[in-house]
Length: 281
Image (cartoon, rainbow, N blue to C red; front, side):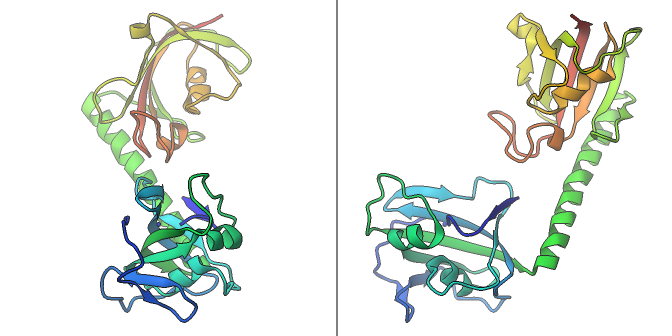
């Protein structure tokens, strides 16, 4: 989850100041629907939100591509001059509103780094959708429940694959990786510090097509075990095999590419790898 103290914040936007109301302090705002009567944030709360920030018609920041809501921890002592905090305190759960905020104020009050093309004295358009307001204790519970929901999805997806494939997998409780050795017979264990070569293919579980296939590339992968690799599972999978063996591995998202994913791999994707004929060099 994202955590911030309000360095950035923003649907966007080609709005000028017309059509905006103004607070006594001069903050220009416009609710995109009638303000709700939901729970409002206070100092020390945690808010879950989505936002975009734009300069003219150029979007500077958007959280909508992130798989999780943006998490913002409000300071217990609320700074009166911070326009972004003022904006959030005007809102309630499920509200969405648009604000005109001075780029100078944002830079001075929050530590925001002004892009070179954003002129001093210019106004930024910040659009906020406030999803949820939580106390710190409620946020800890939310985090735990969110994590457990993601772990249940891993378990359900892995069990469905095992049933569909008819293969029996062994769970490594330390990593969450499940493995099935389909070509055994090796006698030499593989350990950290050894260098190995192997053919590897990898795909997103539930999706067609490989994102990695060393046979197609005409080369074997070589690794020195004990070093850091991406995904992290690559550090562990070879050690479930012995020299000359082959296996299939079900890899949970946190041993894969995590919440960020990468090109061709969605956020929180569970993966399946096949390692063939691993050899100690």
